Image 1 (cartoon, rainbow, N blue to C red):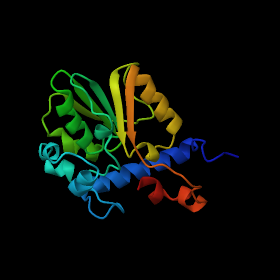
Image 2: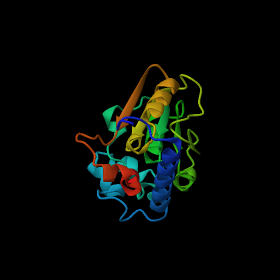
Image 3: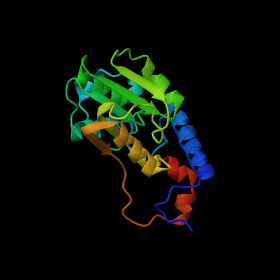
Image 4: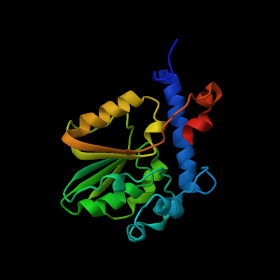
Length: 201
């Protein structure tokens, strides 16, 4: 018998990843009404994002922002840093971070959902690269980044141990891992654990 902290079976993990991918593909097409909390510009401003920084990001990206915190405010990236955004979604954090690191730095974003990645591809930032991939199996070498950020994503990942291990593997010694996410403080009912909708919201 498995405990709540154990990763799900591979079949269940695949099912959960597909539910997350489908939900965020829907958000890419129509963000309104998908979440029980403010999203888009309203949500970003409520979380402390700088209005001027949001003005520099394409409106279609800002409109699809569904983060739960502000990892860039927790610890601001420095100029010249190499930043990895785990579960970058539409790319808002990656695009804001690209301004902070400047031309000497760069930002890479990884997300499961191609539709989300496509939204930010037209932003034209030379120091940003967004790609489809899994945060549980990153394609980068050890110590590739000075900073790893994530915003409201790790709670959606079926194998959290793998995601954390990968984040620390690609982070250079002494680098920073900055996460804004949802935390469970009580026992989650079995019916909620079984719900694909709950997993992907």
